[in-house]
Length: 316
Image: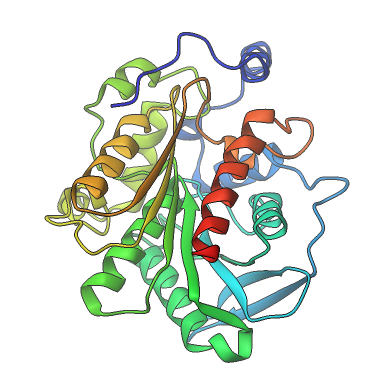
């Protein structure tokens, strides 16, 4: 397992100090709607968003799933990343992750399709996953119209979105679905369990706590049995053979650090090519911290490393 850093990065230490001086409510202390509103306040629209070639807003599939498509400069067909936002399956939307998707599209020179899947507790497991898989299939089936390079079709996400991306990859393997060139799992949730050293070390005082994760899981699952399903807990899958190459990012000061590292290790043991990037001095949630007033150096580095892996896959 990856080890925790003794001290956070100076920028993150400053952020944590500010959070301590101006205590923010725990997600677990709020209603789902209150938590959603709070998340939107945490990640405001930047004054100068990263520019991409074009943006389209569409509604797709029989369930009218909203997607936001970030199109890079130049001519298609484009390498395409189908992206699922984080937020514990309860919070988050197209806007909370807009700048993250803009950066990935601009820097990797790929199209990013951000999926606004239905949220728990109104829509519990497996509905969010079904929305994500349906969106992924729709992108593949409409590749010609959407100018998608199907040889470079990726899935990815952060936190709960990383969980959904891993589950989409598992389901595509299990059902003979569209081919995935790389799965990008940014501090993913991989197991319905809290029994790791990283939970002991980082279960409070950061961006998310153990109480928050229990709150998220309780909203997402219909019952405890769901938590053992490999599409809810990918780490509990019997086999990880024949899955796409993976980028796995973990943070040393994150309760989810060890389950992300364990998933990377199991993928590697199954013969899957894995790039595991551990940011020892970072907290959960930094992939979104690329807008003022945060705009953290380490957040940019995490996205840069992700872009490097995507570009390498495209060039192979």
